Image 1 (cartoon, rainbow, N blue to C red):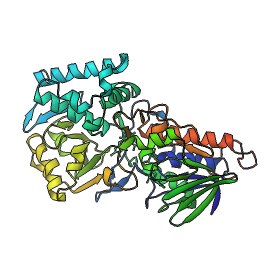
Image 2 (spheres, rainbow, N blue to C red; image 1 turned 90 degrees about the horizontal axis):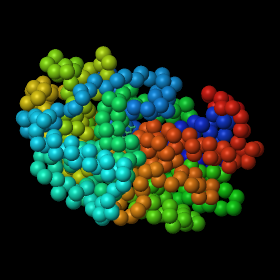
Image 3 (cartoon, protein in one colour; image 1 turned 120 degrees about the vertical axis):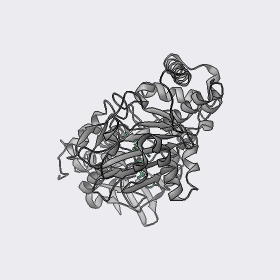
Image 4 (tube, helix red, strand yellow; image 1 turned 60 degrees about the vertical axis):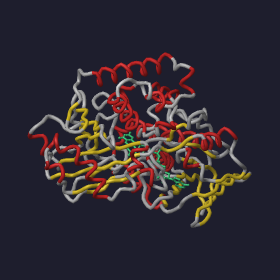
Length: 445
Ligand SMILES: Cc1cc2nc3c(=O)[nH]c(=O)nc-3n(C[C@H](O)[C@H](O)[C@H](O)COP(=O)(O)OP(=O)(O)OC[C@H]3O[C@@H](n4cnc5c(N)ncnc54)[C@H](O)[C@@H]3O)c2cc1C
């Protein structure tokens, strides 16, 4: 097969890049390793007809590209129903808002926030988050901080340096922005499921998206590039690789990539995250209480959100991250579900144990995606802080959320990076190949 531009990966970033090129009348093929488009975004339909997002779903405050795309693709944005603070609970007891655990946790978070802005101390280079947490007074405060960092980053805390964590906090605009619902990264939701967006983008691109085509090697030559997949080779003038660095490390290159790109691929890893959604006939908990947002400090540590769509059935969303997510993998499905729903009984009643359906996914077990939410730097590697470099290597251009200048790691970043990579390619193609004219909405030349 041959094309003008080959895009590796049909996640949000690759699809946006491909759509931009297609709308300019440029020949494009998207090669996707999995049997579905979407990558870290994926929605399925519950037996009650509602759409549940197993991957990326929240539209953050100021995520204007994501908001505009949701609107353009005919989906409905709605605000999260959320309290000022979630209920932080251990066993049947709620941690008091003005007690020692919350005061210590607040003080530590404030100190981390200030350090991330003013400059992290030198010792944070070699100190992991786990080691730093060991110095926090109070077992419950340590546990709360552990769960907060895990759920907001998906990192293994013994494989995440304080320096890299501080860098992430600074880049994302502070801890409040990262961890908050209203005004933060978890502000809004899409009623039809965020995973519907890549499905609709792929439908627009039609036969240009080829699933089940894992790219195993990229050969750059004088007269173009050859990509190899198990289903055959693709000849192309330009390539956009939209795969996160730890996963693109599995693609071999001839000639080899420059040392800094190889170091980036080898100095990063994908976070571990398990996500589940319980679907109920209706959000019965709203009869008794204003909200159902929790941080559960038992084993596993879980963040719980009420993601019920407007007029829809009740949805409760569960996130477990880091090493605690992998610890769930060995459990029987029924046992895993009980481990997540059981701790809510003292707070929401026994009705919580009887969802109509249960939807779950361990992203770190997905051989194509590798994990989430984003690639993380290995401690001491000096690589992988967001945004990761995206300078082209010959005819290879780099997309993927990790390369975005703003909101890297989020869907917003994936869109920005896809648009930027498409622009780069358009500028670098000879004008005979790139019809450099105003984009058409349907891709007709
Ligand atoms: C559980 C979870 C929850 C999240 N929650 C949110 C959220 O609420 N809000 C938010 O904004 N973001 C969230 N994110 C992050 C968000 O989903 C990602 O930032 C975004 O989807 C990344 O898109 P991408 O296109 O850059 O990468 P990906 O989606 O990873 O796309 C890369 C694609 O490349 C394919 N691929 C890999 N290797 C190859 C190969 N060799 N050949 C061909 N194809 C290959 C993969 O299968 C994948 O489809 C979440 C992520 C996860 C996992």
